[in-house]
Image (tube, rainbow, N blue to C red; front, side, top):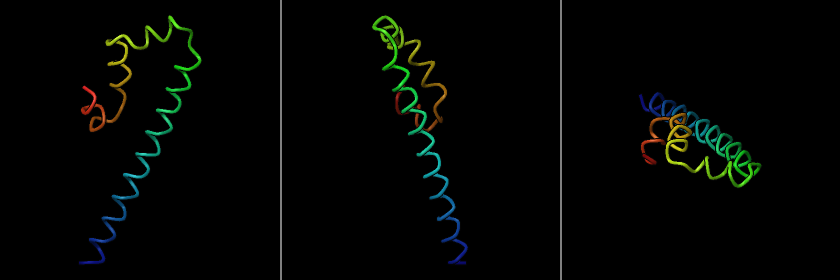
Length: 67
């Protein structure tokens, strides 16, 4: 029973770590995309409705913190 519980915790930790790394990659890509835009592109990105659309694609647990 104890080994099974430890195994489940380890699997959960691996899942969390994988999701975290995936999120870091996505955020870095988004950061690079913003850096490459001109000032008008950056302004449009920062418009609330566009930002909300970008956040919509983040996992629900994370996007809930931003909305």
